[in-house]
Image (cartoon, rainbow, N blue to C red; front, top):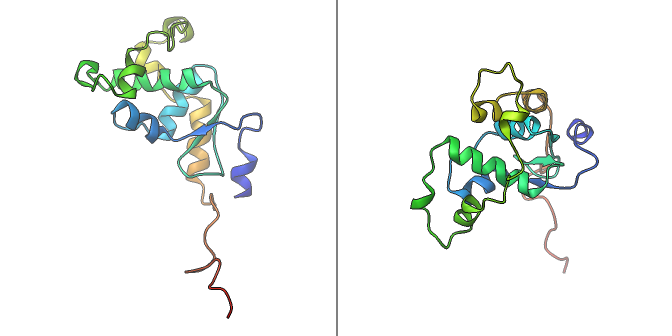
Length: 156
């Protein structure tokens, strides 16, 4: 657990589950490595958090997180017109202000032969660090010491 806390971003208290983002946008959830790769390629830092399992801690603002979610939906061929018009995911997907200042063609290296979407989700230093941390055998989250531990019935 100490290794998890040591490798966490210190200057950010914001963390989220990629599965929650994908459930709102009605798309298959990306892996933690894929989502963190996109954040890293956009210039943000990401790490795992010791506070909750399967969460990413990042210094990216919410707009960037939703932008990555939109691009993941686009990559997976989600049809926005088939979404419920009253759903939060529909409003996020149709909001053109989310990510309006981001130009993937300018961000990716000039010699890259990948498409913009392929490049966005391609592995990088941030995702490789997270992937390595997930592969080592350590206690990541505090486990219950025994079955039925915790407060017992009040003494009589």
